Image (cartoon, rainbow, N blue to C red; front, side, top):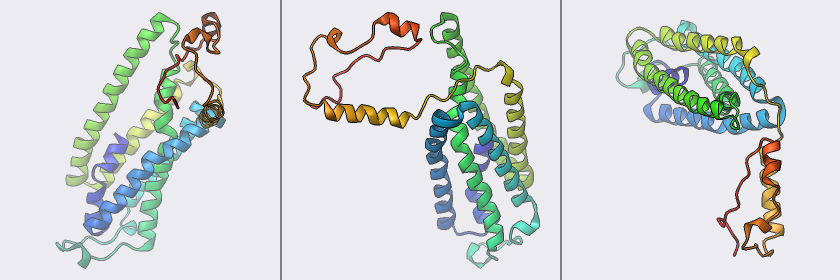
Length: 257
């Protein structure tokens, strides 16, 4: 809800309130959206290699909340936006000052940075609460993700309809204040459940493991692959079950020859 409440009507705010041209506003929205989808790479790395998923998510959530609160102030205080202008041509309206643009974009990119820590970790934290080797918990995991997706679609629907309507017809302060309050409530609910969570320690960077696979494949690309898969270097199935890990079956995909 918080993300959709910001992104769905962002170009309207840039053109109507900050008096930017349509091309400039569209470009700024595109740049911000691109940052939103690039930062999760960094967030996933930090969670896997250093802080762990829980602390990465909590830290990023605090940053996210500070960003959306700053954004709410930017759209609420008259001193942080240009004076109203009813001219049809936005180019003839007073332009936003450096301070006004700086505060607004600082808030947006604080949110983009924080999203890198929330997007890739919250769903994996949820998945980590269930044991795939326990049939009962494995079934509960499917139910969890069904409810998870339902909650996402409800938030998207509310953000794209009710919140956008409030922004257009009531005011931007309330229109951004509602997502900020919703985010604060959701973080509080998440923190209350902390004692009941299963916390997993960082397992190392996945990029390092991927690099090892690529290096090994390049070094052994001339080695003939046995027809019988049992001749491959693999652990016994009992070893996988003891370590509570799944065996990744071999595949002829991406063979060199």
